[in-house]
Amino acid sequence: MKLTIGIPFYNAEATLADTIRSVFAQTFQDWELLLVDDGSTDRSLDIAKSVKDDRVRVISDGVNRKVAYRHNQITANANGIYVGRLDSDDLISPFRFEKQVAILDEFPNIDVVSTHYCAIIGENYPIGKGGHNRDKYIPIVLHGSMTCRKEWCIKNPYNPDVAYAEDSEMLLQAYYRGQFSSRNVRIINEPLYYYRFDNAITAEKKIKGLRALRRRLIENSFNTSGYWFICKEYFKSFLKEAVVRFFDMIGKMNYFAKSRLVAMTPNEIETVGKDIKTIRETKVAGLD
Image 1: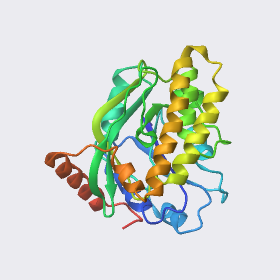
Image 2: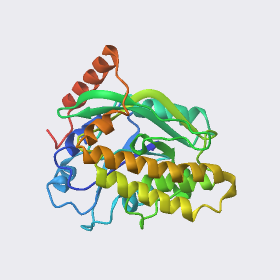
Image 3: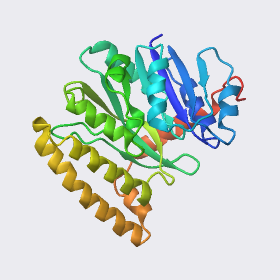
Image 4: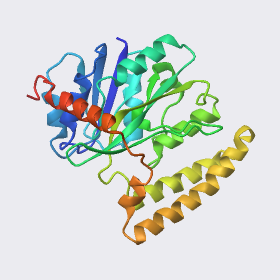
């Protein structure tokens, strides 16, 4: 088994079926899919259990333990040598894992491969694309677009006690260990991850995430190798919080979220449309 794809979900009945279809639509097919329920109270678990395919495993204990715990659970149960992330309300290009696995296969020094993303709203309509800035110290990536070596995931677990910004916290810790930098991270300059933007960024979530990030930065301020990076990110977080509060006060959080996006070319929009059509038409035993 080459790849384990992990989807943790909580009350995602509106989107989970299409997210699963986007895995079955992949051009790369040497995978297993772990669907990990986090104590859902809607029909999400029924949807997951309805899939009839030997490559799919459903894990459920009926408890809401939060996403950090579930990501560690995915790593612990993975049979693949690589682990791919995917959120339960997002979609992915049919070519995503083919391209990421090819890089991991070819370059043994690369542990993490991420991609750019396309923001979608409503009935999967693309409204722009986003990239990942490469900081002097640490690559900035969209968590759901990451595919990693399983050994790297084991060495860099999530902290289940972190309720917000658990992905940023995990990556910061990996950076402090010297295991997340431009040396071992590759970013594909294509929007292969289709990120659902409907209410993805709220003022409350953003502010709680920034505060959690500041706590982790302070706790690691002793790390002299990244001292200036820590200082920069700490004070930048206050500026970000002020901006978020301002846009929330004037009722323009959606504008704030969209302002980070770059316009897509007609060809890119057409490609996304074709990919989503392929996903929606992919037959999955049990879902159809």
